[in-house]
Length: 229
Image 1 (tube, rainbow, N blue to C red):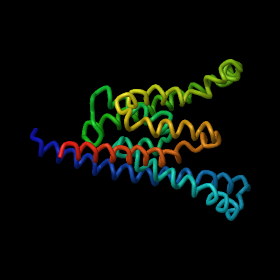
Image 2: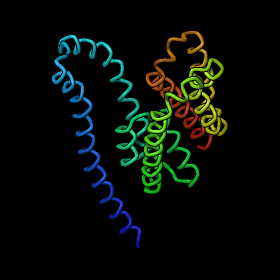
Image 3: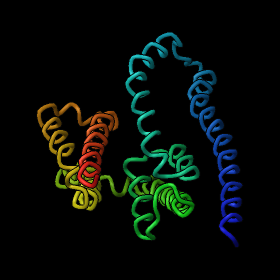
């Protein structure tokens, strides 16, 4: 198959992926928003729509920025199929992004390529299926394992699963790009230590840390370009 034929096949794949992804996204959104209102109507416990809207806008404005930032940052990494799957099934930071990055690194695929599209989609699909299986087992074993899960000895481990996961993954990229990563890493670490409440807004803090990394990259690029001129 020639490169032109491969490109045509990939274009058709992307078109069908967007069609299916948009339809499923709309269905998911309707189900997520419709379920609580349906339960409220059936049980006769419909919430005050005005109060709900007021609470939503007071919190939603902050998360709206975070949602846009995550979309702009993660979609190029995951591609079309992986992006739809990840945003529909959720848990991007904890599960989907690490899984996709690990799979991409294992096969040596690069962002923006057809290989990355396929690998991201397959890895996130596998992650979603494993998550469903683990959750099903967790529900079945919740009562027998409750004494273990509530053990004071294990509580620190549960509280640090995500930092440990991303710390191990980030080290690989920090080591290869220390000139770019050093300043955002130090600034964000100091900021989180000085203002511990920001640990609950990690998605929002991606924006300033990403902006710093982009600015440093641009400065280094300009310097290298001047030195080579």
